[in-house]
Length: 338
Ligand code: NAD
Ligand code: UFG
Image 1 (spheres, protein in one colour):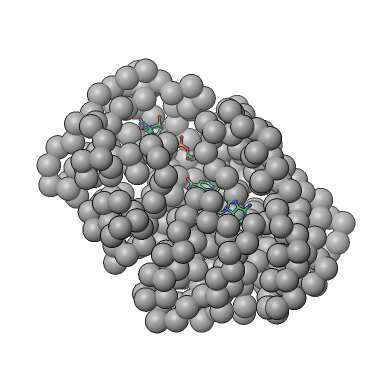
Image 2 (cartoon, protein in one colour):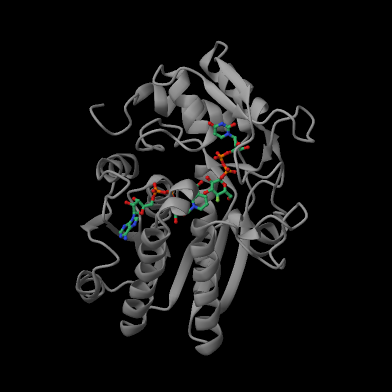
């Protein structure tokens, strides 16, 4: 199939483009490079032995989208493009709603106009909000508690309404848990701009000497070691989950939702200690106060993805930190000047 990947130069997108090329699909990437570099796709081409077509365009630019669909006969879309920093979304809600919601509406309208009605969408475990018991199950009521998460919830609603109104749509809503790691080659990985918000990229920058120490947000949670539990998933497993979802929806109309996670919780300190093993020495850290909005613990019930897609995670926490470290060590400044 020919797959249009929005946000395909980004962290999860670049690993998924590689998985698609390796599965024999043709790929067209649309990205405005607001949070990524085209260098990721050059390296994907090197790893795959073939290249994706790259179009630098913004999803807010309707004529540009129209011309992409006019020039390429696309069979399906994987939609990663969006802004994703929770804290920034609280400060700049209009920018987040505009970019994520309007960008998605433009994409869906262009797809409809060109008779392309298969889409795999990047949702997030954040849609489960604060009140659901763990583990999270797809049939639970959702309700995000920050603007970023609400854009995910609202896009899920838009796609659900579309699937109900027109049975020609094939929709997969993928709720990712905590993606970490990098391709085992060390050639592609996560390249956060500025101070990383997320745990593993922050630890990686401490390990490479770009940050002084890890601040562990909260040591007094009701968990085995007092630090918060999350369901970490290797980005290569996550990428494979997209290929599986795409294959599934290709022949099945309707709206399908799956958690993509491992089904296990790992603490902040367990993650740090695994990273230390990969690096070969201890890393400085300090336990500080809880981060506002953080939950003590959540993980996925991952049984639906296994039952429907035959997909489950294959990689361990140590593989995630080893691969993340290889990427960071080989590319201390990410895609810049390496
Ligand atoms: P990323 O920032 O690396 O990738 C997103 C890409 O979208 C970037 O390359 C960016 O340049 C592009 N983009 C943003 N707005 C655009 C626009 N208007 N037009 C064109 N391109 C645009 O982030 P990622 O971690 O790879 O995440 C991919 C998707 O997965 C996002 O939708 C994110 O919300 C979702 N997600 C990520 C996580 C995570 O922890 N990384 C967790 C759950 C869900
Ligand atoms: N943490 C630290 N120190 C840091 C960074 C994080 O102790 O410097 C802790 C957090 O408090 C949390 C855990 O590490 O307990 C994981 O934090 P992340 O920021 O890596 O991940 P979150 O679970 O908070 O958020 C992630 C994504 C969100 C998404 C959410 C739910 O970043 O986009 O999962 O899917 F909404």
